[in-house]
Amino acid sequence: MKLDLMVMTVHPDDAELGAGGTIAKYVAEGKAVGIIDLTRGELGTRGTADTRAAEALEAARVLGVTVRENLGLRDGFFANEEESQRVIIKAIRKYKPEIVITNALDDRHPDHGRASKLVNDSLFLSGLRRVETKEDGKDQEAFRPRLQLQLIQDQYIQPDIILDISDYWDLKEASILAYKTQFNSLTEDDGPQTYISSPDFMEYTKGRAKEFGRNIQVAYAEGFTSRKLLGVQDIFELI
Image 1 (spheres, rainbow, N blue to C red):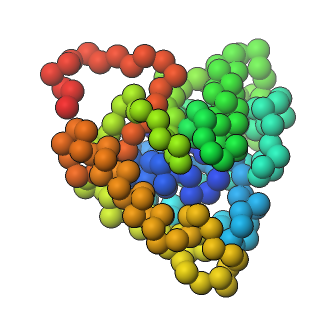
Image 2 (cartoon, helix red, strand yellow):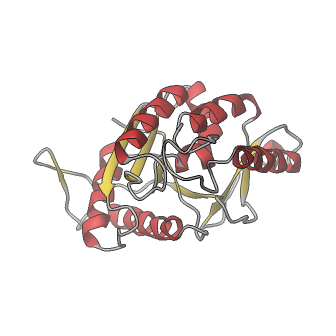
């Protein structure tokens, strides 16, 4: 199955927090969109890997994505080395996405920047025909997406591009809140309180979306960075 857009991020909930509105927008427009989680988030303070997996499936249902898959790398201990790269290469060649969005280039959580570099390097290697991989016993063709973008996560970074998600904020919020053990919860049944479990965190997330939106005169937006210069064919189409 070929995807138009793949959001490939390290923890279940990274995709929803950083690009939930973008995902919902392109699903609504009929694009084939998938989420690939690198790890199960098993080191998270609240909940378990199993509850996180169930929450991820509910979030995927809310957003309407075509694919949600978990690659099972070790949360906190994955490395940018051949074994992990080949796992990612196989997923890229399987789904052949036009655009990939991954984690922030650098961030408070060390997994984010490390995952961003891992995905970046794997995307390059995926385009080399002499890097051989198989799926179901068959050789995979070399493939490299035409565009890679990065989320803006905890650490504020000036975006290179801002996308209007005003019509999809409610879906983004609902997809985040599908992670009941992680967000907007004052109970300690699922573990001690954390920075993200406080209701204030959702207000911060909404404020970030409003701030990005203000810059392009819309209600809500998501910002992304690019490792390369971005070109357009018509400057009159820019907001």
